[in-house]
Structures are given as C-alpha cells and as structure tokens.
Amino acid sequence: MPRRSQQEDYERAGLDGRLSPGTSPALLLVDPARAYVDPDCPLYAGVEASVDAMRTLLADARRAGIPVVVTRVLLRADGSDGGIFLRKVPSLRVFAEDSPYGDFIEGLAPAPGELTITKQRPSAFFDTGLADHLTAARVDTVLIGGLSTSGCVRATALDAMQHGFVPIVAEEAVGDRDPDIHAANLFDIAHKIGEVWPLGRVREYLGPFGTPQ
Image (cartoon, rainbow, N blue to C red):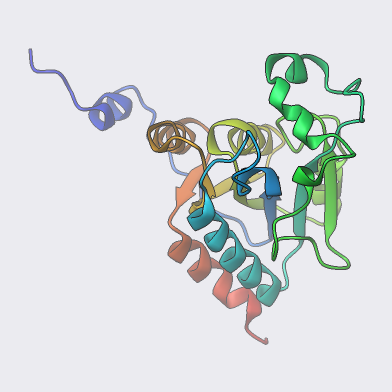
C-alpha cells in the first residue's frame, strides 16, 4: 500500500480544522532579543530575515491601532529564578539581568503605552498576567511573531489557544536556528494549535482596522 503524504495523513486523522480570526486582535511579539541576532552570543540563530518581517508586522499593528505586547526573558544575575528551564538550557544565562543579550532588537522595543511582559519560562502566558490583560482589553485573536518557532513561539501559541484566544502565527515573522525544525513546528502549529498565515495575509487582515470609520 503506497504511503500517504504527510498532509494526507493529517487530514485523514481529522487534523485539518480551521480557526477564523475574531474582530478584536492584539499583536504579541515573543522575545525579540539581541541574543538571537548577535553572532557573539551562543544563542545566535541567523534569523535576520524574520526580524525584518517582525518590524513590518509591528508597524502594521501600530498603524491599525491594535494592542501590542512584547515579551522578554529576564533572569536574576545568579539564575535562581530560572528553574528547570535553565537547568535544561544553560545558555539561557545570557538573559541574566546583567547581560546585554536580553535587550530588545533595534526597532522591536515596545513603545510608550505598549505592554512589556517579563517572563522566565517559554510561554508568554505562564505565571504572567497576560491572559487577564488580553481579556480586559476584549481581545479575541492573538497575532504572533517572534523567536524561536520551536520554543517560546510554539509554547505561547499553545497557551493562547488554551486561554481561549485564536492564535495566528505570522509565518515569515517567526524564526528558528534550523529551517527544518522551524518548518516542522509551523506545520504542527497549523494542524493542532492555531493558524499559520503568510505575512501578507496578516497585513490584509489588519488593513481595515487602520481605516477611519
């Protein structure tokens, strides 16, 4: 019997549902940290193209006037709040409070009035007030860009769905150090967690929000 393609196998298993975006989106930029674009850092990931797309996405979100949230990882200098995550990934020490690698990438820092979420775990929702903030703002859809696809982006998309927000990952505006792992995680997110849209489609969705009524 011929082996089914991956797409056919997932569809046969019923992993082909689609989520429709709502009418009250927010943008969530996950960990746009210098660590991922500085070649001197052990976490350098070669994601400059994704960073350019993140800047475009952020500009569109601001033009549309939707809420913007930007996350960062920040650990105590001694790493005492890093928990199991730090034990598993010791290079996370680059995000200690005395390190420059946790600084926001140029052009991706939150503006006055935009929310910064500081976290010590992969998901932007874990042990933060993000879900309450989005609920209070009546957000129903979370547009996601950031780093990295297989780590904090995926964890955040999963928790967005579990908190009742439609997660939409902007394909070009997320990145990872390995293109195969990046692609596999986008495929999995699209079939089990939320939607993965090309940046152009996200921009089209945002267009009407910036139009005067």
